[in-house]
Image 1 (cartoon, rainbow, N blue to C red):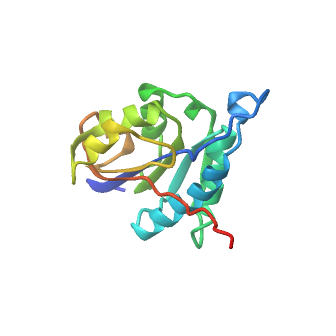
Image 2: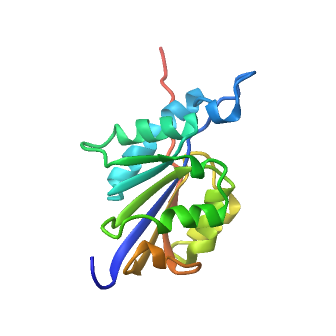
Image 3: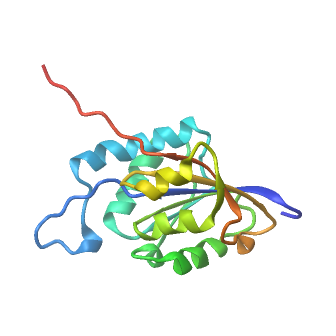
Amino acid sequence: MTGTALRRLVVLRHAKSAWPVGVPDHDRPLAPRGLRDAPAAGRALAAAGCLPDLALCSTAERARRTWELAAAQWGTPPPVRHDPRLYAADVPELLETVRAVPDEVATLLLVGHNPGLEHLVLELAGDDVDDALDAVRTKFPTSAIAVLDWSGRSWKDLAPGAALLTAMTVPRGKKRRYA
């Protein structure tokens, strides 16, 4: 890819996880609400036209399961790379991972954890649409999705304040009601 291109970074915090006794943090599964919300996140990404060319996902069970349930909502999911650096990553580690993405990728999905993801969104967003930055500053809950657009020749060029935060949403799945 040559010249400047519109690029999109979609940040998805894993869905609500459970806290089973004796299970290491890395291995925690999704809670019932997470099992409902992850597919809703996938549907929301499809409806918004934010399907990625590549997904980078934490190796933690709750992030992997969020990815699986979200991607199952799309006809053909993109390739995914499960990267151990994304588990408990801070902004420098997250940026390092994103900057290593091939230039052919126009839309990248990052599935991971707070507080790193929230801090990354706030670091990259130089401006926003519809007070999306205020929403992120208030709370970036489980299943939250932030969409950052920016122009650049390469992911290596992504810099603090360079992106426009175009959306922040928190899709929720519906509980089943039984009569």
